[in-house]
Each structure stands twice: as structure tokens, then as C-alpha cells.
Amino acid sequence: MKITVLDCVSPDRLTEKYGPTGNHVIRWLSPALPEATIDTVHVAGGVPAPKPGEVDGIVISGSEKGVYDDTPWMAPLRAILEEYREAGTPVFGICFGHQIMADVWGGKAEKADKGFITGAREFGSPAGPVSAYVAHQDQVTDVPPNAQVVAGSDYCPVAALAYDFPAFSVQFHPEYNRGFTEDLIDMFGDQLMNADQIAEAKSTLDADVPAGLFGAQTAAFFRGNISR
Image (cartoon, rainbow, N blue to C red):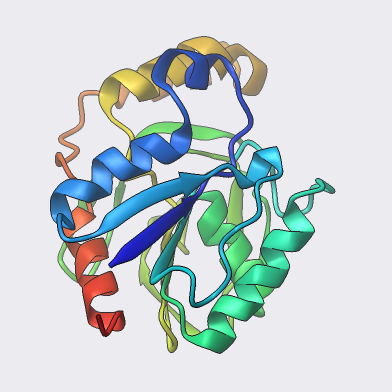
């Protein structure tokens, strides 16, 4: 089984300290999917995504960009998402990945009026409430006609989507940990939030976010949709 992470994050102070975002996703998913070979391509750096048939499954990372931004790499990403759907290539999306999948496949993502939200937040799901780290202002605001909402919260009603073809996505960041999220707040919080919002975000960091959050579910998604 070969999985490729499409890394949609441009280099910044966090990637300088922690390494590329694609590597975080690999470290998170690999323990739950040990039979897979997982690599990463930096689509935000202009590296082409693999074509259907060259890979068994795709993960789309978060990004500092929104689906409405005019970047050289986003139009090719939109086009390849349509190819993956047509070919039945399983796709899992995280944050920006969640948003662009919805935007391409008949829904809409945009800046929400809640402002930038980070720290840990609780979401309702069929398995019960779960806490997860987040970092976003954009949200899916219109659900694609072929998708079902399977997790949400008061501030983010569309926190996870399951499609009627091999695609699944989440607004939260299962690959984040406490230290990374705290550094994100320290490095970028003053650009995105006021002092009260920063303090509120930091107050959530002691939440009980499970290690390997959503890894088993994501592994089961790929196993169930890849025939080899």
C-alpha cells in the first residue's frame, strides 16, 4: 500500500523548528498503518501530485492558505482532486484539505465570523465527544451534496465529512501535539488574535487530546478502500 501526503504548507518558523508538515502527518499515521509506505510531496512548493494509479491513497494537509487564494499550486490541486474522485483513489483531508475537498466537490469553504480559533476544542461524533487541536479561521459552510457531516461543534458545525465515494476529511489536526500547538500560538498568535483570544487558546491546551487521535479510523478508511 502506497500513500502520499500532499504538503500544502509553505516554509515558516514552525517548519523551521519541526520540519515539513508532511512529515508530521507521516509520523502520526504510520503507527496505525504499518503496512503502508507513506511519502510526501510538497505541492505548495510546486511539486506535482501523483496521478491516479501511481499511488493507492492520498492525504491532503493543512495550509496557511485558503481555498479562495490565487496560488500557482492550487489550480493543479483542484484538478487532481477531480481525477482522484473519478478514479476512486481514497482521499483523506486535514483542515485545508477538508476545506478544498468540500469546495471542489460541490460545497463551499470560506472565512467564518468566529475569528481564528486554535488550542484544543471538543467535537461531537458518533463515538462520543473528542478533543482535538485546531488552528483555523476558514470553515466548510456548505456541505457537498454527496457528503455527510459526522462530527461538529457549536463553533464549527462541519468538523468532519464522509463522502459517498472514497473520501473523508476533518477540520481538526490529528497530527498536532500540545507543544506544537503552543508554539503556533506563541509564534503567530499576535498576528491572528487579540490578547484575550490568545489567553483563551492557551487555557485549552491541557485538554485530554488522545495520542494518535483518529489514526485508527484513518487507517481503517484506507484499508477499507484499497484492494491491495
